[in-house]
Every structure is written in structure tokens, then in C-alpha cells.
Image (cartoon, rainbow, N blue to C red; front, side):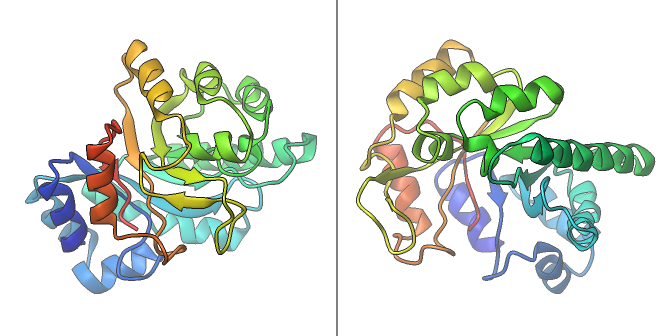
Length: 257
């Protein structure tokens, strides 16, 4: 945590978004070992010039088992104490068919009822990671869940879904308060049919995305997603942030991964 906050401070960033720390994605276990209690974490963040804009959980709307829901709820005491208002969840699924849509809506309803009953101030943001990266899935989902909040993975809808980010923005702009940016080239990598590269050195149309965000006066989070825990061949996050700034990528928060 100290390294992540320090890196952000050195680069003049407002906040970090945390998926993994200390080599683990079990943040509740990491926080317990490192800070002892939610109030201990809150104290550290109160004294930091850099905030935390989101905790990234592993919950999926499609495939949300009872165990997965229990693991997700372990994040809430930490988020509530630290004032973290966004908890990332995945969409899940593969096809976006009627059955998957119904399951996603059911999990959303479970969360709404739980949050209302417990008085949680934090809320979920749904990442366009799986079925929501598919062409035409977003408008169908938003028609059924018009008040949901999206975390738009701009690279995923572009690379996996083959969608122009400028056109996708027209679909998601009323529901998006957080988005991810990253870059890649078409050359296959060790784990994927494409290869992640430093921001500004790949094929992602960042200039066009920046233009539409600026035109709409977007004021939400733009977060550099750097998945080195899963792709250890990537350069260090510090170098990625430098590259993003040097190449004119407009963003506010690197993910703490």
C-alpha cells in the first residue's frame, strides 16, 4: 500500500484503484494483516494526499454463488470505514442471452436489497469485461437496468468486442463514472491473442477517446489498468505511468496491481 500511494504521489495523481496488493487479490486478508482493522486502514488513508477511488472485487453478476457473495461482502467494512464508494464487480457470462441477463439482474437485485438493509454507502460499479464487451449487449442490458453504474473497460469493448470507443461512449456515457484505459498491439502475447504494451505505443485510439470525453465534459475516473500480476512480462507500473503522461494519455488513477 505504501508503494502504491507513494507512486501515485510522485506522479501527481489523485487516487489509486486497488485490485491487488502484496501479491494477492484477497484485499480483506491483506488489510487485516497490514492494518488490523478497518479503522487502521482509514487512518492511513486520511493521512495520505492520495485517495482510493475503488476496490476491485472478484464478484461476477453471472455466476455469483453464495460463497462469492460472502467473499464480496468482506470488502464492505473496509470500504465503509475508508470512504471508498466504488466496488468493482465483473459482468460475467459469455453470450448475453436471456438466461444470462436474468441472472445478472437477479444479482443486482440481491445487492440493492443488501445495501438498503445494511445502509451501505459504497455501491457496485459493473465492469464491461465479459458479456458486456460483446456488440449490442450494453444497450440491451441498460434497457433492463437503466440505473446501474458502469465501469467501462475501453480496451475490452474495443479489442474483444470490435467496437469503436467513440460509438461505445454514446451507449455508456449516461451510466459511466469510471473507465479503464490500456494499450495493445495485434501481435499475440504469452496468454492472449494480442499483446499489452506501454500506453501510447500500441493501437488503441486514445486521441479519439480523449476528444469525446472532453466534448462531454466527463469528470469521472479515468484509470490506467496495468495487469502486471497476470502479465509479468509487462514493464513496471512506474514506467507505464511515465509513458502515459509522456504520450498525452489523459488519466487520473493507475490501478494498484
